Length: 133
Image 1 (cartoon, rainbow, N blue to C red):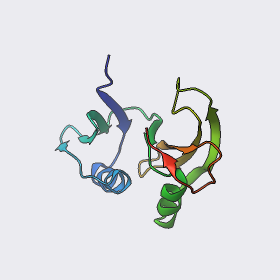
Image 2 (image 1 turned 60 degrees about the horizontal axis):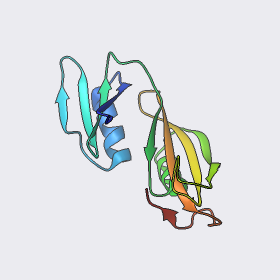
Image 3 (image 1 turned 60 degrees about the vertical axis):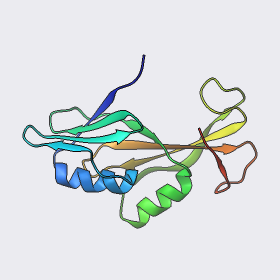
């Protein structure tokens, strides 16, 4: 089974398009207004920002969560939870073996919480080279 789409609430599609274009580094692939739908492509999984959708928490893998949060904070994005290690992966069941999983949470332009995740090699210093998934 493959994940096809994730929906997230958005009151203002134009504002959400600007926020997510900056966060994701890509433009929307489609807008249908009415009825109020905005789509991004995340490596084959659609991110739908929709007026009628409930709020949810989405988690995005980024190369370096600490650097990404610093850049977002400098742009005025609210940081809900600063970057921190949440888990060490001894095996590869939930992430790359031998890495620490870093996570932070931000608030998007529509008031939703977005989790940002990255992995560093075991014993790597904060801000060091991240392992890629």
